[in-house]
Structure formats: C-alpha cells, structure tokens
Amino acid sequence: MALIQLEKASVEFSTRRFKNVGLKDYLLKGLFRSRVNPRIVVRALQDITLTLRDGECLGVIGHNGAGKSTLLKLIAGVYPPTQGRCIIRGKVAALFDLTLGFERDASGWENIRYRAYLLGETPQTLQGKLETIAEFSELGEYLEMPVRYYSSGMIVRLGFSIATAIEPEILVVDEILAAGDASFREKARRRMQEMIQQARIAVLASHDLKSLEGFCSRILWLEKGRMQMLGPASEVIDAYCQHYGTPRPRSQAA
Image (cartoon, rainbow, N blue to C red; front, side):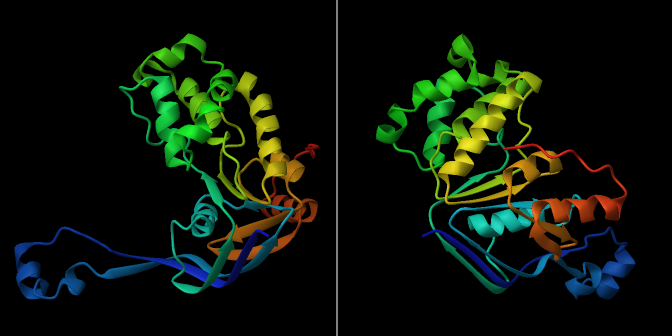
C-alpha cells in the first residue's frame, strides 16, 4: 500500500543577505559577519498536514512562489522537513525539469540510456522500453544526432518520452502537463493519464487548471507556503478563480 502522510510539515531555507560594504563599515562591523550579512530564513512551506492513499490523485495550485515545487520535492525526498513529519511509503518517481541534465554532445539514443538509468531503470528493464520511448518521441533519425542540434521542442519531446516510460507507485509531476508543441500535447496528455492510472498515488502541480480538474479528485491550493484550501477539484478551482478574478476554465474529462 502506497502512502503519503504529512503532519505539520514545514520546509525552511537559511541564507544571508550579501551587500557591498565600504572599508569603514567592514572595519567597524566586519568582525561580526552577521551584522554585515544578516541571516535570512525563508519559510517555503508551513504546517502542511495531508494524507494520500492508494487510488488518489492530488492537484496542487497556487501562484509562482506559493510553495508548489517545494511540496513536491519534499514528497520526492529532495528536501527533508525542517519541522513536522513526512512519511512516504512506495517507490517515488519525480518528473520535474524535463530538459535538465542532457549530455549535449551525446546522441538521443545515448541520452535515453543516461536519463533512464538516473530514473532507476537498469540495462535489463530498459531494453524492452527503448523502441517505445523512441516511437513516442517521434524523433526518428534525429535520435542518431547529438542533442546539441535539437530544438527546444525536440528536447522536451525526448525528455517527456523518457520520463514517462517509468512505472512508479507514487508519481510526482511538476509543470509538465503541457509538454512540447500543440501537436504533441494531446498524446502527452494521454500518456500522463496512463501513468496516473498505473501509479497508486499521483501528485500534480500545474497552472493548467483545466487539465488538473480532469485528472484530479482533490486539489490543494497553496498561498505563501500555507494551505489555503483542500477539497474536491471543482470547489477549489471555483474558489481560486473567484479569489483572483480570473475566468473559470471549462472542465476537461480525463
């Protein structure tokens, strides 16, 4: 049984505000670094309490900086909670930046192997997926070329095709529901639906409210790192759009 359980979980980042100082200030205050460059605590997430079990798909919404990506990285194990508890049971697959980490001098085929191994595949498990990944990407003979010659759209196609070939128990997705160009999006959407059905739990963060309503049974609305609202997808989207005075997107069947 897969499980995500957060109990008053918080994530804080500590940094310092660096500024240029004159020689006089440095001599007067420089012996005390905290006076010259004061410490700043950024509270990215605060008191998040949430439980997800088998069969649930949660959408996460909020403006940039609301804490969506931090929440997903907490679930994926990238960030530990600085306060509270984060209990995860099940194999987690996290789909974040699809274009990150490509070896630009390597071919498309070589990058398929590199990225798949990083996602937990082995030479044995990947062998049966190579042709499927290549076919889905629609890159054909371009897979023989170094990716440095790819357009940004081609790189996204390849990254999406690799990342969505995995079979996770817990799927965590950050802003890739509209991957690639218009002709690729519908196929990408169908692939995402297949992955969500295969995964025991899915957590999707996106600004695409229409897609989230089609995929998710519940939605979490974050504001400045705090839970603003958690509930049925249609109710949360209604409240979110009303709060910001934006048009309500038409629902999209999954």
